Image 1: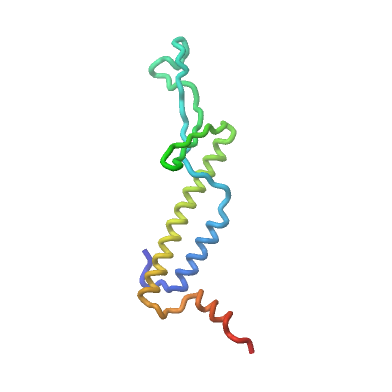
Image 2: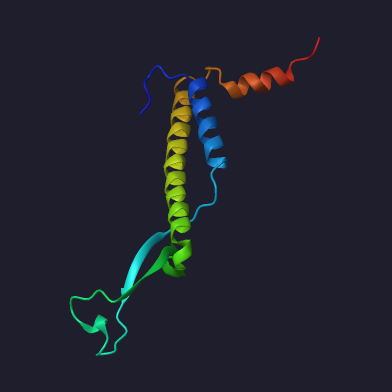
Length: 132
């Protein structure tokens, strides 16, 4: 939550900072990266023992698309890159949540004080003024 002393201009500056940070994010991807171990089914294989986890790990990236889970195998050499991309996506989600919260605070403040000057109206007014 914001302190009551935060001004409209300060909130708008925070909104612009968050938008700028979001726009500068590198590649990201949604999903969960999970190591998976599989049993091959051969009775003589080491994986047939109860205490053996199986063959692997093979890494799967899963995500939900239209209420269906999509899974994709990730090659071993790409696991760290994909892990970083998923972390960047989580950071994006946090920034996005903060952006919405700041926007709500701006809207609430404008409702409470409709005559308060925002940085946007200052910019618009300065563009519309006749030049000497």
